[in-house]
Amino acid sequence: MDINGIKGRSLIEPDDLSLGELDALFLLAEKIEKDKRFLGESCRGLLLATLFFEPSTRTRLSFEAAMLRLGGNFLGFADPGSSSAFKGESLADTIRMAASYADIIVLRSPKEGAALLAKNFSPVPVINAGDGGHHHPTQTLTDLLTIKRLLGKIENITIGFCGDLKFGRTVHSLAKVLTRYKNINMIFISPKELVLPDYIKNILVKNNIEFTEKESLEEEIPCLDVLYMTRVQRERFFNEDDYIRLKDIYVLNTERLQAGKEKLIILHPLPRVNEISVEIDNDPRAAYFKQAKYGMYIRMALLSSILGVAKC
Image 1 (cartoon, rainbow, N blue to C red):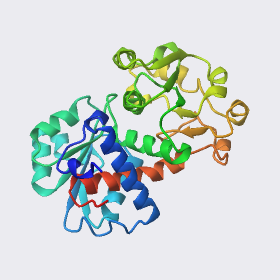
Image 2 (image 1 turned 30 degrees about the vertical axis):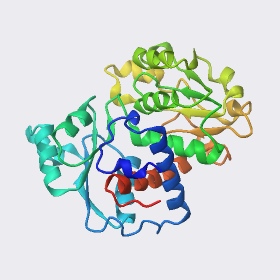
Image 3 (image 1 turned 180 degrees about the horizontal axis):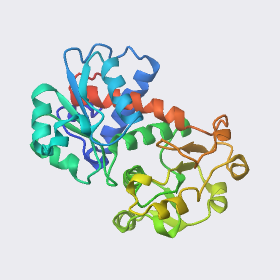
């Protein structure tokens, strides 16, 4: 077990954790899933600061729920307009202030690189909860845990990423981490305007990962073990007309899903807009709400490990 090596460290991008540390976190999360009281009260007297400069539901609530279930507490803000950033306070000063009150900081920012900057100014560990279109490491942990729990493995799979691959930080983070697992085949399905950034493709090439870029969801569904749907992100567009033209380009419905494998799992970091029809929710292959719940378990495992209270 590599769990003790995580103590006191920040998590800025998924590569900050070794495969052994990832496995240790997954094992700990599975123990918590089986018994939610497993680490209960282990964080009593400890405080988490949740600093969200960008809207969030699942990430913020799951971090706060995780800390409460561990016996700790939290403080922070979910609206930058209610913080001194609205008055012009620098991120460095906000981080220094929060670190004087809390034992660990979770930061979400619309600006790429904000989490790394925060780490450089913080005397307490910082967890990146999403920095613009760059990384979202705890969503990646959630995605990997979900695949492991539902497929029983992470290796030897074909995964299709569909939708906004240009701005989708969850796609970037997950694709990057999957290069460290054996026999992963990735299929990237998007319109030409929203293709995967070159820097991620370069990482895949460097690691000899098999991948293809396609535009048709229907043609690729039959070969997938995992379908990772994403929304077209309105907040990343500079042109409203472009967003409207592309937002409904991929809609997963029962007709399109008919060709999918019986054991296919459908993931989505959420929130969804129109890209997955509600008629899919009752399909046993729909795993996105389970995925959201696994997010709380893995964040409990991560917080307890960084704070040094986890036990095997």
